[in-house]
View 1 (cartoon, rainbow, N blue to C red):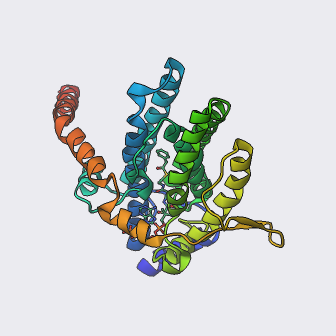
View 2: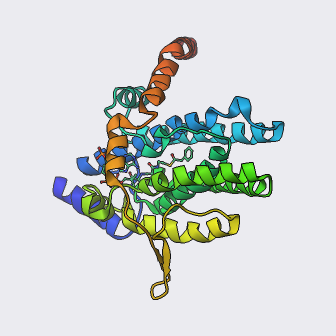
Length: 311
Ligand code: FAQ
């Protein structure tokens, strides 16, 4: 009976054991996971575009090979996460349709343009840095397939973060013009990277329930603070200034105070009014439509083989 199933589910969560695909789970738990995992997958796939824009103009063969590998990793993360969503009964093609129709979200951060090659380094350092901060605790998420996917994804993200930081260190050892490019990119990406963690806790409708279910392990503000504390010393070592005059170390807590975030910007970008929203979705739509014949051919081939096996 349903009460016994609910009790078993609650006990599993309380004991910090994992929920697996065949286990009974409340509808809300399943819905929340599909929402978060699909959004996460969409972010990886849409997130290939800003850096992908630099593949043809990377400054050397070595940089091009590194960037190509990183963008391919992002595709892999997206597919891996769609598989995790499928264990909950979601359909991958349907999730992609929802993304393209604007019925599901992807991270706000990918709606900003990459104006110079330094942006590639700053995305690795700040965007992957924020992604790691947010995702390492998700390795302990209560849903087994999501938590396990996060372990591998985090390993690759930390490699991405280091390649971005190394790229920036190289540019900072270069010319004045290169140093100015890095500073300009940091000025443009710092505040949007803070917004990746989501709205402030007081305005986050999902956090409390997601934490009670063990899907999320920390609140948005906790993770944002952790990210700031982690990033400030890295900025100092790099020799760049983070564009926040109010940024300062609180000697009592050992944590950094930072200025007010412009939440109206996050709202605008999430609702589709960022600089790049339309282009990002138009490209994703074109990729789906132009490549539909590949999907159709692969499906027909698989069906033919299955029929041959049965015969
Ligand atoms: N952008 O109640 P909450 C990457 C939405 S990393 C867009 O706080 P929640 C790697 C939120 O969905 C980026 N929407 O929601 C990479 C909700 O809307 P809904 C992806 C946002 O879920 C690096 C509403 O606002 N990472 O891709 C954003 O408890 C470099 C209310 O918010 C993940 O997805 C935002 N920034 O907390 C790739 C990590 N913030 O659905 C390429 C997993 C909030 O109710 C290059 N996700 N919203 O209509 C999470 O940890 C959570 O979902 C949060 C949001 C923390 C993002």
